[in-house]
Amino acid sequence: MVGVAGKSKACHECKRRRVKCGFERPTCTRCARARLQCSGYSHRTFFINKTLADPSASAPDVLANKKHGRLNRPFSRAIQAQLDDLVNLAKESTTSPSRFRLAAFCLLQKTYLPNPIVADANQSHAAPEIWFRAVCELEDSCPVLDHALIAFCTIQVYVSKTGTVSYDEASEKYNTTLRHLSTALHSEENARLEYVLAAILVLSTCELFFFPTDNGLRVHVQGISDVLGLMKRSTDVPKIIWIRLWSRLRVISVLQQLTGGQRDSVSATQWKELLPDVMNLDPLDQLIDIACELTQILDVATKVSPACRSGDADEVESAAMPFWSILRDIHAWQSSLCAASPEPLYRAVSSKLNNPSDDTHNTKLFPFALEFSSSQTATHFVASWAFQLHIHTILQCLLEEHRNAEAVHSQLTDLFQSFDGFQHESHKLARLLCQSVEYCYRIEMGTFGLQTMVYPQWVMRQFFARYGSRREIQWCNNIGNMSGVGTRCGIKLMVFQGSMKYFDSAAEHSDSIQT
Image (cartoon, rainbow, N blue to C red; front, side, top):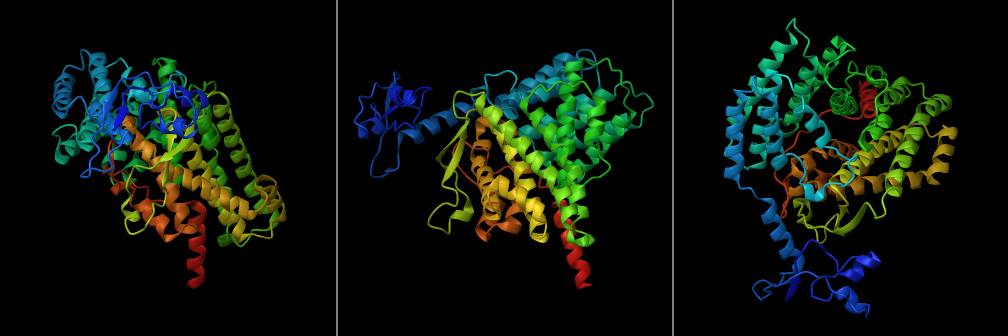
């Protein structure tokens, strides 16, 4: 069998027609079936040894394996040596902090950050590199920040298995940083609060990969709140760096409030007061601008839950209307992204990952996966679908409990034609998130790809626990046990412990009735 190698995965004719290419032969099979004169690929060919012993060999599989081999370079020894050099360089960080942080950034480019081959060419779509680059661009000496970077790099080498780091070694680096952070927070000298915030930011990201639950993350979110309470308006840190740090800090705070219900964290209003003239550097900032209001809206919805016995039509309508507003804003945000791109931002392809929950069934639960145009596009859409599904789940529960709220149901009819239509949209969002897992777990997405799925997986589990089937729940619970060529499968990520606020209120109400 003959295959084609090169960057293009489509012949000239299929690219021109914007259709999926059947590139199993020098002139693609799709063109052959359509009786089109295929103009070829203009790339070198290679031969695939398809035999009776290996009947499944195909060009896509061979190309995937070749790509997987390229992405595994540099080899473990090179990354481990780079980490060892970084630890030695940290001893000189007081005299040359910029050199040390540049070395940390270069190491994380090979483990944590997405590979440039999946990056968006649009410089304004810079997440996730934008926040981590800002951390490493801080110029002054700060021991707690340097220890945090060492801990982060060590943990990334440990979880990605690109070196010889043990669990005990990674744990020791993390605990050392905690001691330095405690000293910095209790120091009377607070001129370097921005650096302490950057260290908290790095530590909280460490925990996503190193701790099974979010208990420690909640402490860091409280630390963010405490430090910001001491923060002076004036700062000698360049404004562009501070805005980028602020952007990531806000994401951490908002997600923790949504998943853990931490009421004394920084509110959306407080974030705006900290930087009232902030510029939206990234579409993700624009999305968080919309989503950061969710925590207060969820509090209002909880007050009209069955636990309060006060859910009349007017109250339910006033509680539900802000949700509709946020949904419309997210739809508009998604439409603007799609309109700005001449090409589709994502498409369906055959799934290559194996989920153990599918082994006892004849077909995969999700036979198709999503292929995104870039790592940034995946980040943006996965986050927006997760926020939408969170809202849908709460609204669906709210409307089921208060079906007499006619005004709210009229709004639902305008948006989705019927309650059944609303439920269909909810399941569609859940399916899109499940189909995004495969792309986010690719090696070229770095370990950041896994990080993007932490909150979405929490939302998926919450939704399927109430509205899904047993098979869908099992599929979500086995995401960490998936396997496939060229992926980061097998890395265990933090699992948020909280539940959706409305669910908590309904459970408390149920318990009080039983009592």
